[in-house]
Image 1 (cartoon, each protein chain N blue to C red):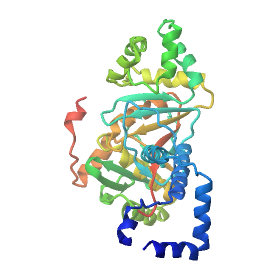
Image 2: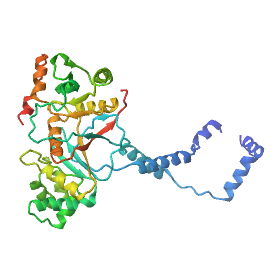
Image 3: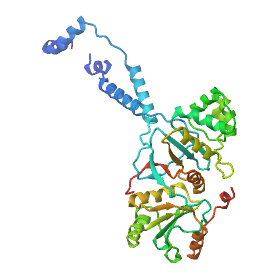
Image 4: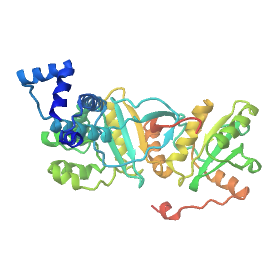
Length: 187
Length: 200
């Protein structure tokens, strides 16, 4: 067997050369395992702690309040131009035009729901004004969703208003019951 | 004697250099890309919107409202914070010690009434962490939030106000904050959101 090995060594000039180098010069060998372990530990740590998504901001401009003791039920917008959007608790959303209970319709959030409805409705009204009146028990996501639709549709004339008694009456007239969250109302 | 056996005894040598290079490259990348989050007292799950404007890091007053309606404040500019609390204390006819003012500047935000805040600033750091925030009062008869906001605008020119609330925070609490802002003539403010796609 050794004969064959010898033969191989003589037959391969590169191998021979290496052997000579190894014998003549000692290569310094450092154990890099610890360093590699540390590198991967740091890598894992930074990968897990990094948050790539940065928060964004949405600007909201409120109308100038006319008077502090302005009665809440007075509509500052002409009836024929107004579209009211009412986000209600439990993710329900209603929409009506002017002050008429006949036009009350339930819509869904999102592309097929409120966006499509407004896309059809807005061109039919001269200078439309959208009034967003969130119910006190609706949540922040509902409000952001509607404001976002305003941005997507490019509606410039919109206002954030209070959910008033009139809205309650109109919804009642249209036969819609609002499930009031009495426990939080008491606070 | 038998060659296969001999070969197995040799330790296999794997060239790990490219892998190590890669690992360090990634470490460097993540090291530089990371912005450490300041620890917040309130954890909020942000709502999604299509807007694509990054939140400014300077001159921001963030009003955080958690799910239960507790209000927290955070002023981005550290150098304005001492003046902020000094003026707040002045309205209560109080003069604060420098140590307390320094502690206040170091806080990542706060969520308690002024009455509770002053003894809170005197505590040790380990004690402070244990305190459960009660929220800044914003009731119509005791609206401290309004005082803080007005003073923040006075000490920090060009201040922008942002409302950061949880997806599930009831609108009644948001409304309270918005009413506070509008009654103090802040009609332009921001809502903090997270990016989503328009076509979802």
